[in-house]
Image (cartoon, rainbow, N blue to C red):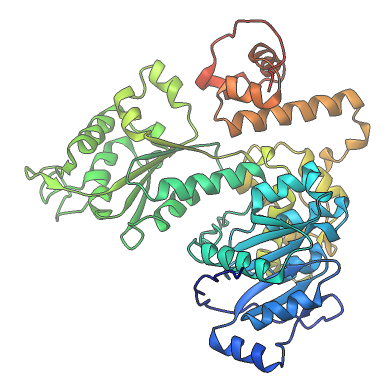
Length: 501
């Protein structure tokens, strides 16, 4: 039986050749007449082949089918080959790596511009960690030995699928000093998936998160991946404008509307016509402006201050705040009907302290971006600095991390940034932590991560942690996390039994 190959889709750029042949090999095209003819018949498509022991016969077959094959023999070599802006196919030989080496491959496997096909033996595919990697990151898997034609068909399908997807989420760097969205933890991957889903709709989006977590970057990412991306993106900070001026800033005014109004001014809502309007710190919006905004959301029309004409405006509203709007509604400071208009779709920004390994990744990313600010050639961080960053609670989140690293780059006396340079020396005493304290800290992090994953729904978070809702509620009180569960903060009732699968 022969396998019908899917039509090949052209790719913008081939994967760059790597000169270090001892570590990473870019295989030259075969010289056989049939292989050369096949390669000329179709544009070369990039393919990453990850294996401790690459199969030369398979490589030759793939080249004869028009694949430009780059081989990596380790996770480090693979990381050097991956290009975030290049779609390609991928083959990962899980059978050739030891189980302890699989963790190093995961960062590259989760790259969404690569369509991975896994190779595994019958024995290896039974391992839970291997099954998790295949389930989460691979289009398909095959048990070896397998016909080369089958592998060629599968990688062709995987490559065709990834060329339909957008590149990995990474909004442009903002020259104002904010950083791009960087993250590999599950909370950030869930955020990226949520952004892709909500971007294709026109419904209002509400972004909730602590100060400094990157809510405006998330709003911009939604806009840039929406059908409105060619229209304006307009942001207004409702907490930075005096209340008596906010109405005219939002809806504009006509000439002569008040003293000093010498000419007509277009408001932020009208300026965003056809595009997206971000209402940042919406919790600081005064009640009179809330009523005007609600009327606009209901009718799709505005009236400039001092004018009588109703002007239709087509704009998507994204709102963001670090304020607990549910509490503000209970206290009468925020209209419930406006909240339900704004919060059709909800996006929760994870705090930096809940992002685990991302703290170190972000620190190195900021260092790489701003190291030219120092006359010295800063190479990285000392172990004590890494330890301090993990121990610190980061109340200012990503914004605070950027500021601390930038200051350390300028002030550091050595080529490695220390905990003192970050002004975090007091957080390097991890060796004095008792086993009980370590267990308690790990328990708190696990509960916080589960609440974030399930948007503070206690039943689902408890099931994820394999404990009862009663136990979860008690532990939240013990660790001071009750405010995180405000969405579902009714005292639970029932037996304190573990949740069964």
